[in-house]
Length: 281
Ligand code: PLP
Image 1 (cartoon, rainbow, N blue to C red):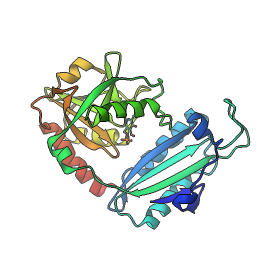
Image 2: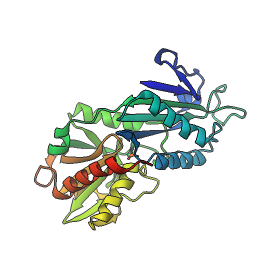
Image 3: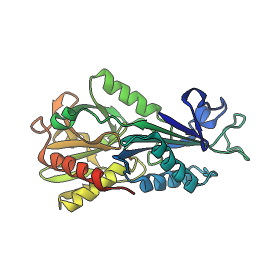
Image 4: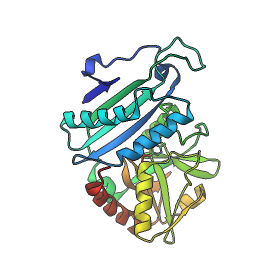
């Protein structure tokens, strides 16, 4: 594990943040998780874009400079020596006496953690995994990747306790996304996923998979779909930086389709693998 805090390399024991850091007190910050495959960044530029957009939306000035962040990420990954890595990036509004309104004259806290990436068990991709559904109890600005993840953590814990891999959120009757991934379904050859609005995180993997779907000329509808439609789907899969493209074969104990990863899912898993071998931007 390699850590950079505010642009300085620090060892694990000394990687400390102030008790009045607004990330700690208010969850007042943003994060990104970026994947490196065999030394190549998987859409680092897109992660940086999303971070900048999020910063604008929460009135956070990236005072250290986005270019400095980008260069430090690259340097950190190189220094780590990890060919396959996950890069955790967090930026908070910084440390100031506790008050809700934004402080002035405060400097961002920015953090980079590089870890060796451990791929998920191959049998997950071959056999598929299970999910449960949970009410989406988050706020309505889910497109902003804030560190305020308690609702997501509770959902994931519920999945864990149910012996499932992931928790799929429904807002009323509509499936939005999952606790740390986006959700796709396939019905009669058509792929459905929730539109990229304020109710979901606009996943970088989601973006990559939409490109693969277009390249395959698969029928795609970015529109809301119901819980009922999820259960009646022929195929269900998740997308996420660490999740990649993951087939779901059971939801709330009910078998999806034939109970095995479907054809379209398998093709997208294969295409995604190839993409990770080529993308470096
Ligand atoms: N949705 C949520 C709520 C997430 O937390 C994540 C990733 O952490 C995703 C979707 C997938 O986004 P990405 O593909 O950028 O990792």
